Image (spheres, rainbow, N blue to C red):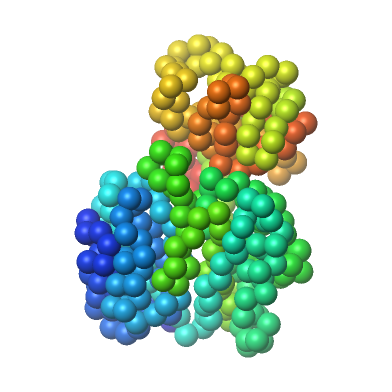
Length: 307
């Protein structure tokens, strides 16, 4: 039987870690097998993780800094939340790969090397929650390299670290350590398959836009013009406000969708460079066709139900 406990606090640093660890121990009535942490930026994450590990009784921890935190009970900013899992039918391990920006393939190989799946043959189903420093980029390259390094035997899912939309420093956590320019993974080796479903509910809202120049996560030009101009034109057509000095309110409702045979891969814009290029949270391949995408409450709810 799998038991899950969820805890959240407005406290920070060591006090937050101790409080959360005590809460999950009380809910589970035992030591958890693994912890997943999302913590607001700007606090002492090292102290948080040390306090959490000590109070909860495990150092199998992964997580990241975040941009708004929520559980079923509360949402907002400046919070820290923890999901604790206890499952006799699952074996967990927490791994890290560093120097993501310079060597995503090397980071993936280091992570795969530390996976324990090959040592637990009685737990044949393999998956991993992967969290990356979004500002380091190369996320898709990392996942491709992880798939190769594990011979396609793992299913990967996850997301990226945030910093309340400041885009200055995002961090990931493994055990009681904090990393930038890195990725972490919670390996899940289980006796039954873990169900994973993904739908995003976003649809094209602009004409097709050809990626005429890109550099990893930096979208340089669309239709041979500076990328930012496509967003400005879309804002004018759709009567939305767009401010180059503060683009995030617009970007949060207008992401990039990359056409693929299986649907649209979403790329979240993070900021605008001086040359008019748009920095995204993951790669936008040069030569692909994209759209500016939109969604609404109904479509998001439908996507969640389908997933």
